[in-house]
Image (cartoon, rainbow, N blue to C red; front, top):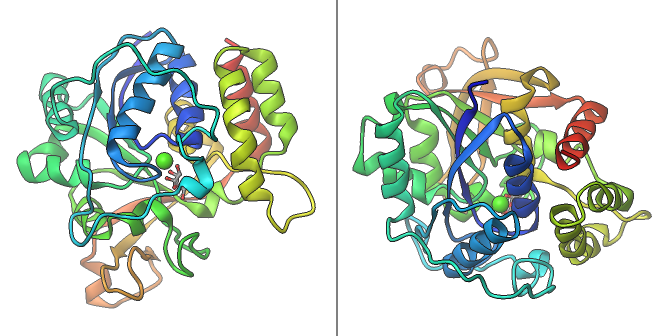
Length: 314
Ligand code: RIB
Ligand code: CA
């Protein structure tokens, strides 16, 4: 079986951890490396956390450190109130023993894309600064990658940072604009699908039961995360946003994708808004000239949940 080659660009992060283990567990996926970026936590912590996850999974792959700041503007605030002071729900795992790869995230992406032209799907589940930088350093990157699957954006639903913007896109809107405007296959998995599937505590209990090491880690880290997502709700729940673009690689038929034109806003009030016009809904030249992407608009909940559980159980 030829495996799907991926690079995971990530800001771990609890749902990042769940997604990374999901990819590690799949026999159909080869993770070439983890490239890290600021986002949920500062980039130094993101890189350290990525190393912790690799060591827990006993997987020796490169972990690179990437951009620490948005493309434009000051350092971001981080999401410790969602992911804990350590990015893992304050469970404070031991420091990793391994070392961060000397290549920057952007350098690693370019090097791998040149080595395996047309074979790699870049799965981006944090702010998009590494990918924007890689595009600037290697303008041929769109021809060298197979596809870019992004967790981010909100096409037809409200945002989670502002009324119009999702966190990953809002955190580095200028970088996102560069990435969304590039000429590659871009598949967007935004809040349209990820907020549509809340996970109850029994889901993380099942992950822990099926896979005590990796699922157990996700379970412990997710307690704090579930507290955050359950505020004001009658039942406890959380969301595993970052696993969706990986699931699409394994089972594209679980998703309904809508093709259309997109623009990312960089103006202050609408920063990070992903405005989306499905094909046939506008005749405006400005919109018809905007880049084309595929947006996930529906997902099969029972089958996706089953895919996560079965993969953790392997
Ligand atoms: O909006 C959800 C996204 O923001 C996820 O990638 C999560 O990890 C956070 O970074
Ligand atoms: Ca993330």
